Length: 431
Image (cartoon, rainbow, N blue to C red; front, top):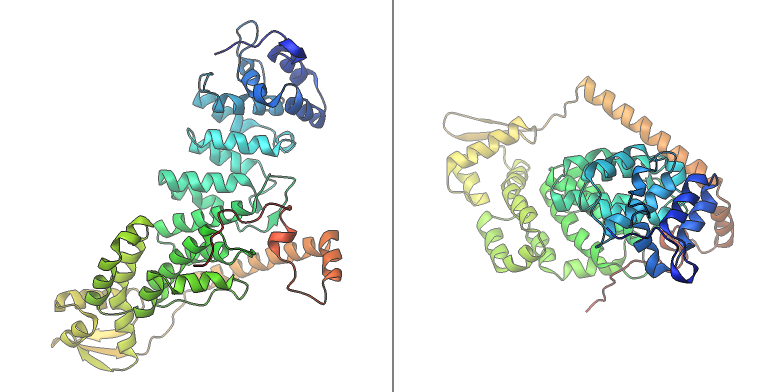
């Protein structure tokens, strides 16, 4: 590790000087300004990643809780330095579990910088950071997107569930150096994690939030989310539903003109027809990493075809059902129908002569399920009331609402929540 303990030529402060400021300052705002400006940008992190003139590690002198800002700057510089040794996991974990969130919020860009460095080494520490930094998890931060991307890349899907369980209801650009794309990446990656765990309804919600985020020009990630959204809907319902009305119309046109649009149009069909179509587009589906969802949709196709038969026939033989869905083995058809009966998807009986008799499905709810739905509805009502109170108290919202009361469609989330210049990245144009 390099040493920058003595004062630098040209008047730049040394790391010893920086440590003196960190340990004596009692004003976080002033200290943050100093740490951002004590040396030229090109040398600042090099100094922060070095050791003291005595050779001592400054992190061994500082306390993660009382010296949060200084610790944050030095640790993040160390994580991104090619000259300094990588901090030990215990140092990273100690900081993320003990730092003072109030101090850290004076340097949101530095918290993001730290998270990007931690993502390479310590998912548990990144979880501590994302759950402790905001006032609560309903505030969207840059850490949400970094954390979810890391969970998906490392296939630690269940680790993301406590974060995904809290709906995003607040955005504060003074709390985190947010860009428009952070919202898209968080919900896209969240949809992937939930889909991998076969939590289809929640995955659908996350993909839909990504797809429907307003923008003058849709981002490429929104089209990718739309492809996964329709596949999740086919698995879950056997058909797709229209996206929210405020979804950019170009997304629908692009999807319809793609192989995904053709797949949706022919679904559900006999298994041989679906497999033949997918075989022709296999390279594309593999490249876009949607083969798994495609195959799960194909596996569910017989279920949706059988459900359609229940609307037409009262009785039908296993062999007849097999011909309709494209399955030759009567035993395979029997297994599918029994699974559908057990899961409550159909009401049917199979007689000794292999005749299936269908009946109307009677919805059944347990007391526990009803109680859970009531509690869930009460919680949603509480969250919505809180959001409404916040909006009604917003001077910016009220000013713009009055200004644009005759033109309700002239402004949207991208313009009003995010600062200028933070629009959707990676735009794509219609061909």
